[in-house]
Length: 198
Image (cartoon, rainbow, N blue to C red):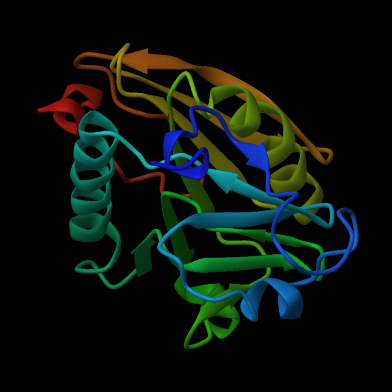
């Protein structure tokens, strides 16, 4: 087992052959060989994330299922899950756990990626990714104009809803149990948070 296989936190992938850190672009990222690892580019720096655990995957599937029923089947837009690239800028490439693009912005959806800001991104955090999701990703999502960002803590069984106001996120609160999310991106979404963690 290599050090890469034992990653416990999001780490700059300094050993990957390519441009110097800080100069990675989408084209450099797209040229990486598929080694089964999850890479993202933040401000030109290539990062590698540890593999998600079972609880993380379960939460993604439940949330995506609820969103898909509400968004896609109601004809409001589309829902995608990782791995699917989001090109926020030439030097910021992410694979959000879940993303929603509403009908008004479907022109941003290409065959292999979304070009620009989705209407909603959802990240399921863990001790290994929480800091990265709340710093680097949150800043990049805000800078790119992603209107709404949900931070899901599967261990605590909570969802924090962040909405973009004047290029910064404002928390609408942390929700749990039978509470519903005050989504501005999808205002008619009325699923109880506990449903995400069944």
